[in-house]
Image (cartoon, rainbow, N blue to C red; front, side, top):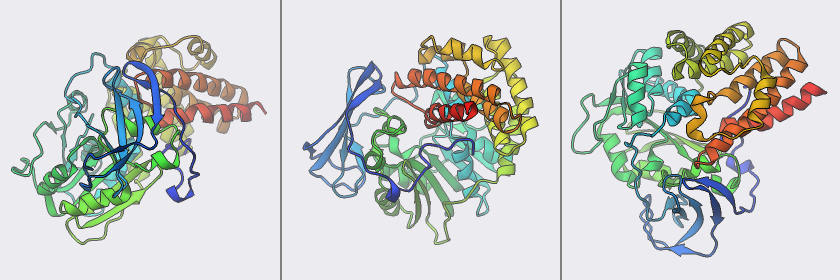
Length: 450
């Protein structure tokens, strides 16, 4: 891998526990203060295990949604899950005033390989009908259909899903998931819910509805942030996206997630834990469940290649698929094809944004002298710009053996990653890959100059 996801590094048992510190953090109203709480309690009922406390209050953080409001997380004394005190459900159906959230997700933010992994885990058993709850833009059902030919449906009422329905040509429904009535395509052989359950303040009701729409022999696959990250790496790069203050209602422990799944009709549960996330596979049946399946690299790259070829030039999906394809090809040492993709994206970005990714020194000089608001990024840069520059620098270093060219790209990567991260942090979000790029680019830059 050129660089790894920040939340996929070492197991919890190997983490070094640090004392958490208060610090500045982005929020809806600008920069605020994250405060770690000590000695305070709440008697609010835990939404996972129903224990009524008293529970310790762990931290208070500025809301990513509402200016001048703070979100407080409590730590359940029984199941060790973290939950928001007096949580108010966010309005996910409201459209964004700009296209920046869409461009960020499509060009940079979507965890494509995690989505792909869920599909290959599901493919361990025969699948005909596939449901992706909270599908977002819809990359998951799109991959399931194009790679395996399944009857794949997304379920999401949000504007991001509506955009994906149009741009990818997929099926996305807006029906409510309930225990009273099955969805039209139910029962499903596989249901996935990637980064969904943490948004729901009543997880038992939600998971019973999932079970109601799943075949008795089917499988549920879900991911959610690991609440224990707050103990093991409290000031790391993934802290802000794990908290997502205002959006996330519950941060689960592995034990808490297993418990709520077992209580809602899934007696067979396998949870794989990393420092930042939980990957769970659950089923009503007794069949073996394997959560540690790797994606089939050739089929995944083939999907990126076909989608990049078919996407309208200059569209968000053209840029996003191109970046991810170039990254994979470079990791696989298919350097010439990666350079061909880079050339196509270079021509597109010169035409659209008048930015030449083939001139890294010019980019470094430009981004080092400015700030850009999140909403204004799409009119100036692709959100994957730092990644494109880093991958091109890697090709220069490893394939072309041109350290001076590599150094220029790594310098531009560092400045660009810092600029884009600042625009994200200012509205209370972050990106693990982008955060790692700044540090990795600095290390590669030093190596290139030696």
